[in-house]
Amino acid sequence: MIPLSWYIGLSAVIFIIGLIGFLVRRNLIIMFMSIELMLNSINISLVAFSHYLQDIKGQIIVFFIITVAAAEAAIGLAILVALFRNKNSIHTDDIAEMKG
Image (cartoon, rainbow, N blue to C red; front, top):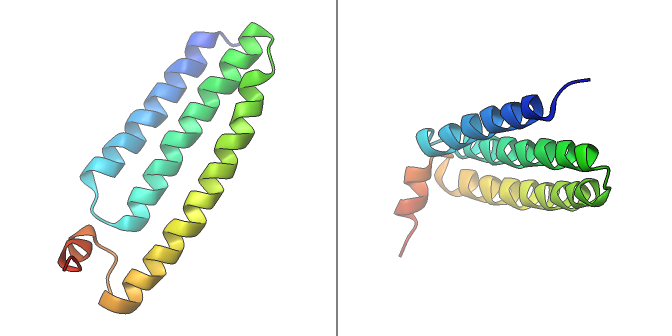
């Protein structure tokens, strides 16, 4: 059986990769993928703790997080399409130029 610390370590590594990707990259698609990585790392840790504690509450919360992530992806991609139609680019610097 794989120990809990390995799951938490994997979750931490994936979260850090997502955080670095969000902070360093200026492309909005990469930023949204980094947010998804961070949400999925939280899901890994919740499922690991839920299995370790023999409680299903963590796994139920994961379904809500997946739902929120799907809604975030749909809204985010709609914003990206609108931004691309206006500026022909998807970089965060172009969003700052849209301020009035």
